[in-house]
Length: 263
Image (cartoon, rainbow, N blue to C red; front, side):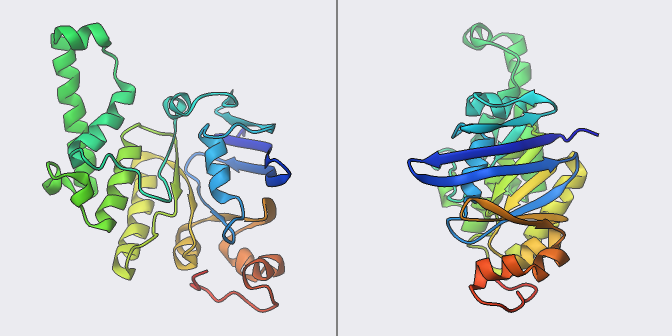
């Protein structure tokens, strides 16, 4: 069976620096996978390649057998790949509701003429978008803050809002870049359950970058490990914890990476 997202030997170099070399990944529908590695390993560069921020200099990226190489980020989002960012990128001066509504417009069918003339079709679709936005905010326990300015939300709520906004594009594949960054232990526990529930509720395929090994080992079913742009291991959480190359990449010395250790 062909993969939903098939990444075949993509590479990218900045001058003489090989940021990502011969990276491969195959995700089936419903997979919940992790991408980990020390700082500077190339993880976010991979996300930037998958979402069109960078173009691979070699290799191919396919979603449902459609080649995504050379597509712009908006086209890749429309094809079904959405992401969050390591550094939160909300529209801070807009309301919580409008942050999600904007993303819903990716699937709009009415055009500029309909919007300018304020046709019945335009009004109907705008109502549907608002209902969809409130539905997503309810899932993330943010509906009661819908009309607040996004920048005024607590940090953990901003993280959840960014995921809600990504979901509003109706993706097939959702890429989460350090979703637990800056969260307290209680928020991280809630995030784990939320990610699992999103996969089941929306039939999503998820790939996450995360430095908190407790989160990664608890929810990811398969993990790819990068170091200096190279894939050094692929396996289950149990296999990755015991892999000598992974331990050396993180710790620099032999020894076992303790379950739940944060690096």
